Length: 397
Ligand SMILES: *Cc1c(COP(=O)(O)O)cnc(C)c1O
Image 1 (tube, rainbow, N blue to C red):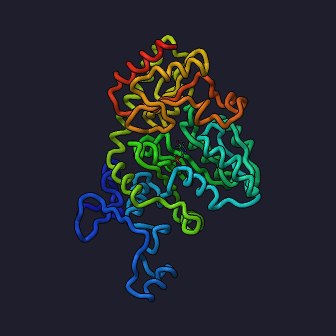
Image 2 (image 1 turned 135 degrees about the vertical axis):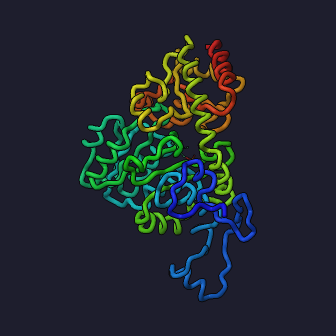
Image 3 (image 1 turned 90 degrees about the vertical axis):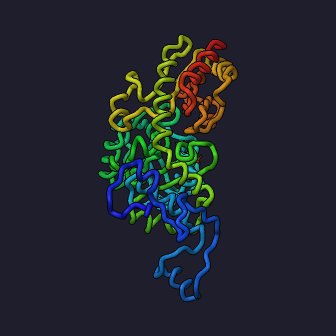
């Protein structure tokens, strides 16, 4: 009782609450936390059989853990993916998804508007192992096509992208990847699986930082990689087992419980973000508002088709560059200055000096990350209070 029947179709909300749950003989209603690093075998024969893969069962928590497995199974059911593997952080998920199968001589194409850590892995880490890359404007489909070489193995993108909130056509890029014999890897953090499930559009691998909306309460780090069974068996499992980016069972338990409310939280955040974006657009001192749910977003139609709602992030620009952006942030009373996102608390960051400070001024200009730009992660407070805080702080500009 209480566990989902295999093979039966359940709605997203049911999968979020009950997917992957495996009760112990105690019948606990809340998922059990197995805070254990190892497992005892009944006999040396049993240990031998498990190592040979002839007997099912846990062996060591770097390979697998019952609480982590519940989180992975729930994530796979939510995404509609055959398999999921959890990692200690979102960056461990991205790094593992790339390094577990790429080798010397391979080529990666990536949309240049992406999370700073992802850009570091692709631009700085991969070349050390002879893996080259081409960074392009991901919204330009012709640029993806032109960057393909016979060595191209991966197309990598984030949509909406950080912090420009540009939208990339997942179906079109998946087709380009498959025609080239490459895999499409999507970092789906900003959209969350509630709004967008990239595998439905042809993505081969989806990665998450579970630190963001999945936890959604600013408590712990985590990551997930979703893939098919063959990629899991051939690449992910041996790499994770032997290199050890594994998720702690405690964090898996926090994330598992957080998934129960993900749909409610993300929908409320989107509603609040839409209201706050509209309020910002009415402010005289705001030069520009970028929100995928607004009709004035350059790819509003694509955003609507791919994500339904606009997401929980709003990017906007104030006049006067860094000095005025800082003056504004210093005048906020309720909203916290933090580079985290997807939290119940509304957070604001100045990308040019935080998440994107490592880029050259030219690279920032190319992305459209200006000195007056602020990225707002809208939380669960009353939207009127969030808008009021922003409006009052804008008076300081
Ligand atoms: C935060 C984030 C990551 C990295 O996740 P961590 O859990 O912080 O390691 C990767 N991609 C995107 C889009 C993110 O927002």
